[in-house]
Image 1 (cartoon, rainbow, N blue to C red):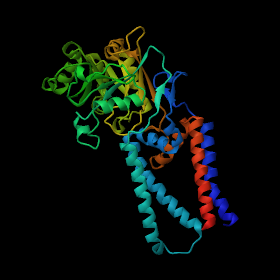
Image 2: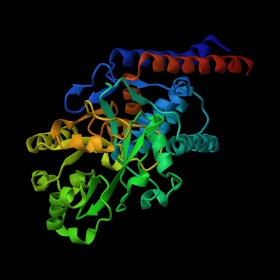
Image 3: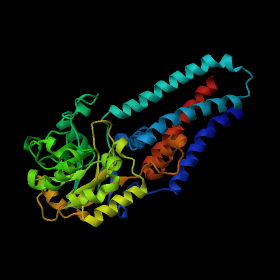
Image 4: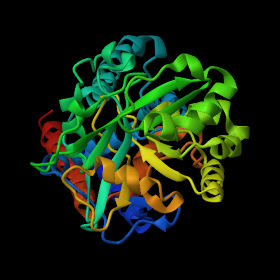
Length: 412
């Protein structure tokens, strides 16, 4: 192989190495508190060994999973655009005089293989309940909670490829992510005490709840409500009645779910809080609900603080993938830990300061990256928030591939 070709083969790994090192120089904390800013220094993400070994694949799966829906659509479109740019640029720089029509069958073959691998990569990341990063380093009196998740009792789980995501699967998902407690809030179906599991073996405790489809809103009720007759909560007045009476009628606290309150009630957040709403979802990991911009986050925080309402980050898990984007820390000094569900609900009654949200760094909908460059933004923001162990795994894989390719090129 010529020296010129050898240098061109080494250009890519050297460029990637330089970019990863540059990302480390521009690094950001992997965990953030949307209210206070930096997360407590003691908190960290625990990395399973499989995740560390295959970091390039696992970190990209996480980066894609944490995209908003607008960014996810842009990611798919941007991937196609960048692929076409790569192939055209490669052809122009090759200096070959072959006509475009003669190259078309070859390019179609390469495109078919690339598209198949890309779809397989995305699909595996969406359906595989793989090893996950989990939150560690919390204080002994802090309970790690998820306030909104689903099982196959919900129609939008039961009628999908995740139809096997039952309560036990939900518990395993949350246990791998480091949660102490998770509320099961299926659509319009109340879970009673049989769903609750006491924490005898270190697994996540499942707490009862329900997600009510009210007037142009989804309201999560935290607690063992029993059956809820939705017919009495029609229209705006019915919605406000539900918020005002959820505690007295169902012994449950109400939590406004995203994206419905952003889409339908953005101008009446103060009205919802004044009527008796107990809390707002500030972070929701579902792509369609992960659209809040930074100014919108600030407004929700201001409304919650003014009315002394708690805020929460939720997985809204429907069984897809294995990426936890957000955790909630609820302090409960001196409270029993064996069954944390009633303890958490009691603490939520303290209002705005009851919950500390811890979320992961990610590419956000209002970040500066243009839509077509979203795939590059995912990679860059992933690199910026990695620690040195994950960065080292990336570099090992980059140079391993380069070394493996070199003998093949020489033999060819």
